[in-house]
Amino acid sequence: MDDVDRQLLVLLQQDAAQSYAALGQAVGLSAGATHERVRKLRERGVIRRTAVEVDPAAIGQGVLAFVMVESAKWVGDSGDRFAAIPEIQEAHVIAGSASVLVKVRTATTEQLQDVLRRLYAIDGVSGTQATVVLQTFFERPVTP
Image (cartoon, rainbow, N blue to C red; front, side, top):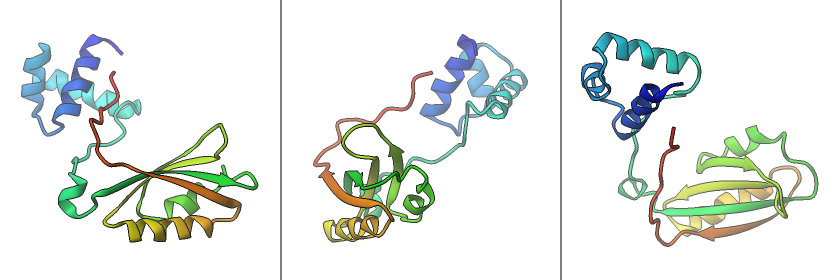
């Protein structure tokens, strides 16, 4: 990956709907050469997907919580069980006093409580510690 690829990644993270002509102009390439570079970045798995960023509060999902999931046994093979809970946006096996860290978005704290109940239904889960976010200063994409 060279500097042009890195510039393209930054530009695409800012607005993935930009035309190849506009991207090319910004990095000094033709639209065709830009298209080819982006295609190769996709093929290599550098660009995993193209998505629209939605404001969670605008669609009624204003409660954000990070939950540390404790376990009595290894739950690192239970990714599908965590993925089956649609309110969980991310799940990470972690080192430390907890086994898994999940990012949860819901409309209400009552719905968050229901998610915690469903987490306890996963075999091996022995406890949770939820931290509710009051305000997000920023979230940033990965810097290429």
